[in-house]
Image (cartoon, rainbow, N blue to C red; front, side, top):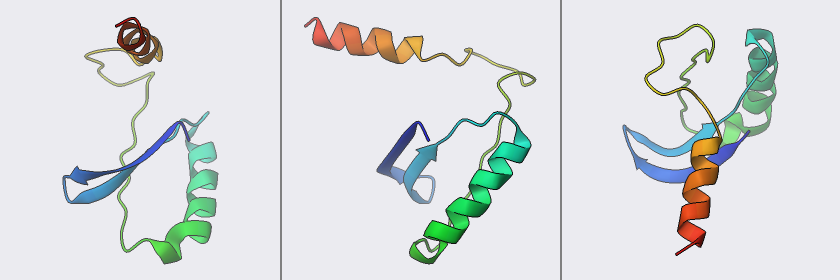
Length: 75
């Protein structure tokens, strides 16, 4: 997991972002997550995407976060 937060919108009140080596790795993560947290969650949805084969309007990179963090701290 790279990010977990509460929030509001799109019929949801939390978000979790995770990165996986492949689909099999995601399935393993999913089963463990459901086992450990499923009883605490009324419902959750999954959005899968590939950073290799999909149409990307802006490529995935942590550099955008680093740049934004540095600009905020330079103020």
